[in-house]
Image (cartoon, rainbow, N blue to C red):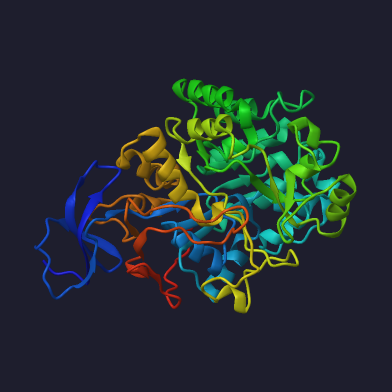
Length: 494
């Protein structure tokens, strides 16, 4: 058998078929052409040694805001081959696709239609420029957080329909940042998604345990929308929005799924979250609802714990888009680690990083210019450690702590995300699997060395253990070394 490239001698795991054996993998024309016992691929093929490694489908991240060359490189070292921004999304999506095409990307990429961006545009006049930074810098604008008039809701829906027609992968709904939104508007978004046959990706409204006066419990709202409209509702980062109430939320999701509602769920393995300092739920008078105070927040550009209310108010005024780490859970506490572990191992839960854009010491996004091309990343750039280590850390927790077998744990990183999208995005039916005919998006890693290295103090240290990474059949990582000239990522469109 001939092949352009052969991965030789690894433990090949396909999370869909259950294939799990030592074999060679042949790659040609960007697809997997054969999976055979060692020695059947001609020696003339270019070969990559996979002895002692696991060879499996590249990881698919449904929730990555790290949409730059540098961000993609960090995620490549974590085994990711497809990085999609579906919770926040952008608008117009066409601008984001064009920018990525002009710059090149190491990983496959795509976006949802951003409900937040179009709502900001309609209610607060924020420009639609296809940049996530604009959306996050505008989170604190009160006008977009409030209820909307019927005519304005009509305009929001019309803009979302335009974005779906332009190829957006679903509708991203950052509802937790605009809690004045009426439940009826959210139902209209869900109904639009149902008609279009796409999922919604929701950052939930507050839970009733956190905010007793909330218009509707955030978890109940998502599952009700699925039941009432028939839409596929995807629950983003369930742990960070549910914290110690996650068992109640997961039990609710389990019940409605057994009753026929289409609800999927994602999580990541860190206690601290990250968002813009101007987020409404980080206002000084709102922090106590979560048992937090200013010192629960770390301003990422300087690394400072926010000392008091005065400093928090200053940062919210002068740098509204400034990223802050938020201690929703404490990674050092066994009780909180158990919460994270239960969410990761929940039936059908998938891994998604919520990877964050790279930021320089001024707080500005650092995804463009010379810093975007440098590798290793220049000192002084910061992000959340989940950008660099989510998948490696999740697999360590699932395999070492929970005791899941490798095929089941790997499915959470590849197959389940692909299945979440493939009904709306046919290209995903060829990803998330290691099968003949599937896209040659492949990660090869040493199971004993796979580990996250980034910390809250040193946020951009790449994960270890990935030996080879193929994106569309091209090596982005070869022999443990990242190829800075490799930009094989392609757009994923509906």
